Amino acid sequence: MTDIIKLLPDHVANQIAAGEVVQRPASVVKELLENAIDAGATIIKLIVKDGGKALIQVVDDGSGMSETDARLSFERHATSKISSAQDLFNLRTKGFRGEALASIAAIAHVDMQTRTHTNEVGVHIKIEGSKIVSQEVVATPKGTSISVKNLFFNIPARRNFLKSNQVELRHITDEFHRVALVHPNIEFHFYNNGSEIFNLPKGKPRQRISHIFGSRMEDRLVPVNEETEVVKISGFICKPEFAKKSRGEQFFFANDRFIKSPYLHHAVSAAFEGLIKPDTYPGYFIYLEVDPSSIDINIHPTKTEVKFDDENTLYAILRSTVKHSLGQFNVAPILDFDHDPNLDTPYAYKEKGAVLPKVTVDATFNPFQEATERRSGGSFQKVSAKGWEDLYEGLDEDLDTDNFSSLAIESDSDVQGTMYTDDEVGEHLATTFQLRRKYVVSTVKSGMLVIHQNRAHERILFEKFLGEITVKEGVSQQLLFPLELSFNTQELGILQEIKDSLTNIGFAFESLEEETVKVTGVPLVVPESGIGTVLDRLIADYMEGFDTGSISQAEVLAQALSKNLAVRTGEILDQESQLALVNNLFACKEPTLSPFQKLTYTIISEGDIDKKFS
Ligand code: ADP
Ligand code: MG
Picture 1: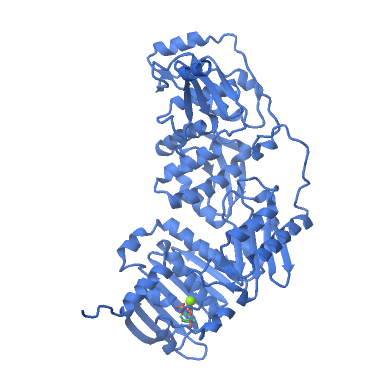
Picture 2: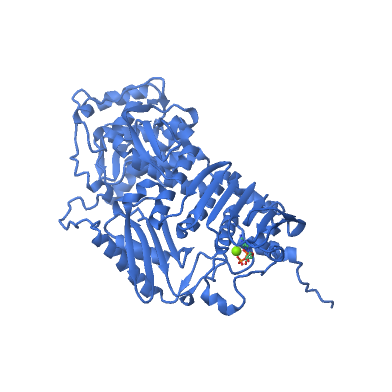
């Protein structure tokens, strides 16, 4: 038999390696920024176009490269950073594999200009798909400029796999944050499609954080500091009241490298336990310094997962350090151990105090007459938009009770919604009651109708918002005093992205350019006191949803809005609101499932009930 094993040609090997190193434009950004830092740059510019698909360029004022080095830098395993395996245990640089440039050059059009501090002239190299296209002498500032164009030009499958420009830009921004946060001594500029989106002057770590995440960060940060034999910890945690629904602002760095560590994250969360709502995450920027020999950063090619020698000790130290800071800076509120009668009330609603269930009796209301009238119409009317407002208002703290007693179900003959099949129409309009602040129970001909209040309301709001986003019919409530809210650059980007949809459902913004955004109007269902929270959560959910799912922007938004605005388990619904819930649920196109594909209601048949008594 003939020999069949061949050595792969370099460009093929490089392409394969590229698959590991370069997942998306953001990976290129990370590698180039890290190279610039390793080269001792003091000013770094990042320039991207079209989410990095068209261009990623990094310009630095670092050491630069000689002609030979410039050429060699594109070879695989070409590195100036380590020379023996032993060096791996004493790494002080970000790179060490010597793979990045070779990989990037294998799958893109790369253009490098570089000059060392001692050379008069520099070198300009063009390389496409691992092939050197040209190399010439050039007059160029000292330092290095590398531009990467047409990423994955020769691997269409990978190129097609890339997400929208906005999503790719978001990934790039994440990488940029991670690098910029560990190097407050380096000045960074970040341009996207020609406009500067970050301008980070040199400064202290704290200033760097607020330059990136907005000046509102200033008074949210609490320093953490600890020095032990095992680890030196520095950085900041965010005060508990600013815990967010998004996992965005959580950063661990080990020896100046961004790392992911669910285990250490747990240590921080444990320190915050009891101080923040269960579904929120504390913000933190924590810098760990350990002996380079006690950390293995080599277990993952993209190098964000690390292994510490003594993780358990690290966990304990970290948790107590964070706890200590929370206590020392007096941000841990005094715990109230008094027994709370609303044991099953979700955390978020505890502060609202107990709202007494209100039963309004309408003497003129004749359920049978109503039912007959409705039935004789052939189909049933939806509760008007007014019912909506009231359903929501009823759940908010400052309830104007008078409004409620005057509420009647208005019929609006233009809007015809079928609620039930004729067969099911029975006494259900007559009575509803709430069970354990979780279900709304009513009767239907075939038995007992049990509605999950939270999921049902999610479904109703979902369809409402989806409709409004597409047909632009949302009713806006103008704010007497425009509300000023501050957002960081990334959040602002998302707001701009979803602005049209938000406007369609009733939001009105004065300007969306600056860190401070003026909100001048909101949809009727959004309580004025909760505008900030709703927008924050919306942005967080949108970020997560849009990245993973393949559903449309409108659907992601409608989902996020419904999730954040729906009545929750634990909330008391008065009679009218219960009724509106039943009616509106069955006026939906798909009443059976919540927007998250969970069952919204069930009917327990009379037969099943009978069996219990047999
Ligand atoms: P690594 O960073 O792992 O060494 P790379 O492929 O990223 O591997 O880079 C290869 C080599 O090219 C580096 O070791 C360094 O010597 C040189 N190099 C890359 N980028 C720069 C830069 N911006 N300035 C100076 N030298 C650079
Ligand atoms: Mg490198």
